[in-house]
Image 1: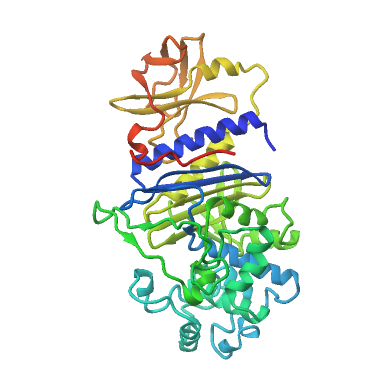
Image 2 (image 1 turned 45 degrees about the horizontal axis):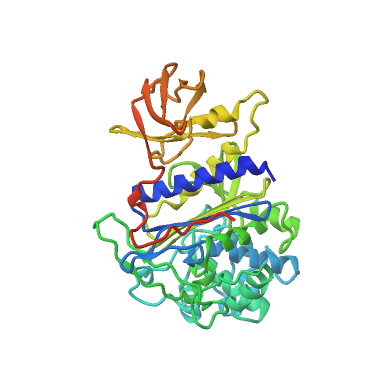
Length: 471
């Protein structure tokens, strides 16, 4: 575990940054958890669980975590592999006889886990994703298989498939002799003590109804300024692909089980297999990414993070796991346009910067005396010490560390600016004017900014109490 003080400071800034980003993009609510070395070190929530009801979001609210379900299903499948009940090279029809003789039945467990089976993404009718009909049940999924699920030859290229993971749910049912939701509960949720996590919100699924409140999903602001609340139906035979519900805190615990240090559920070999790159893909932002067995791969600051994301009707979520440092970040938002991936990456990058070892000659007290949030008519800047460096971070930027200024104090009333780009005030001096409390109240010189609240006052609803807390 890194230095308690460095970690706490990085977490405190990450929490403030999340709160500001939620306000700036008017996302109804954001729930965030961070787990380091198995310890839950941040469990926070900002905004509203339901816009119409003005219900404050809390860390206890459950979210539909959508395609995170695939990572959890993969853990269930790899548990069966460890037990010798399933092999990665088994064909699906070996465990799901209703698929015998179909192209779907001939797909291997490995191909299905890695989205290498070439199967249709959602079938020829995707109206269930628009809440216009029920999600397909087992009979409908088998009928789709009999009609031909393949769209390209297996092991040709990465082709994301909810149907493929639905087929894996049938494999789990055949291998265990129990419904997928019951197998999920027995093999994953109960061993970890995850009281709020369930494979689906169908009343027949263990853990579906826990009494924990469910965050309301909201439409995106892409065709209308109004946000519409969405229903949250069960997902039938696609539970293994998209049905799960959880909290950010419990999700960090569940996905920590793929890290090097966690042997609670999986063998070391299975954890490595899950994280091994099967396909190289492109992220939605154009960055290089990849996919293992039920896990997305993402490069950040020279490290490979694994995890998954999820897009549900009205909710967007993302989890990142650094398996070597045993660090997990989960961000859950309750709007379809919620920037969950952006926020998760931002938190991960803040933690990475904050956990750097400061130099021996660094005067941390002097650096921290300049900290604060500052604004002018041109924008905002957070001045914060992370990892022994004094940084000027624009919280309006999607990536907090992409264009950061490094600030070098020259006495207690000025800093020299090492601008991240040639467009800034590089090599120039900003002069600090301190108030009676010793804090910086105003910047002059190369900057012209006044101290402001770290998060605008109207970021918290007038009738709501702040919900975040750090253990």
